[in-house]
Image (cartoon, rainbow, N blue to C red; front, side, top):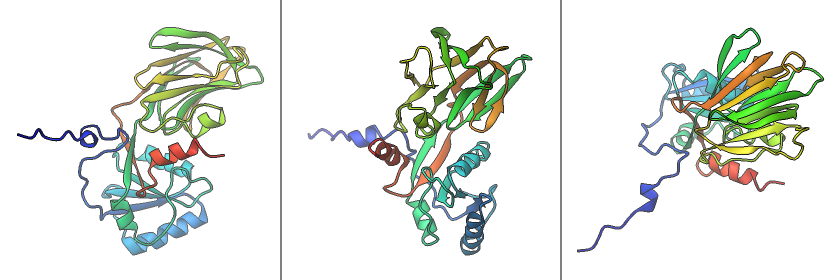
Length: 277
């Protein structure tokens, strides 16, 4: 009797996608940034394909740039409705190419990238707690001409007693090609299961370039000499000033889905970015 053939691809599917069968998408909602070309595109597409509203949509079509995609993902946290973006902005790394033809066919053939945001708890000088989610990164930034002094702990253990810098950030794989890359941090594959801890203009230790942490890591920043060297904490676009402590961990209970045209998945874009000039 012939033993059944082991199908490795079926047993171990890529981690960045959801492979269960998805219902055929027919109900769309359209939203746009405030750029005139994005608003005009929304009107044309809604007239052509219908707009059932975000609360009834199977997929939300976001028209704008990467900043608008982040805004749309934040708004979709409660419903966790998938987002299909088309570039009507200045930067479009997270967006598909704009075309008004065959939209339903493109969406139904699209590849799905599922990401988990970072959960930030920032404690300010008045001991008030502020909570926010970050899809790209949580960044700590000096507020004045004085450099920041940070102590960094991972899972309760101090790993860096004093980092003198302009700031530091913790980035998700999805955010590793954004601010993190500009700060000379590593690009992370979307299914890499790691987070990037990256200093911003580190002065001491001068040669420290950051670290890759497991996705389960709990990261704590303590601000040293906070009165003299005030620091703000920013989770994507949510800012808390005069922080004393910032605690960050990945929120595995929240899943956000972005849809990309077949052959142009987020995994492929992140990989290609590592070989770009």
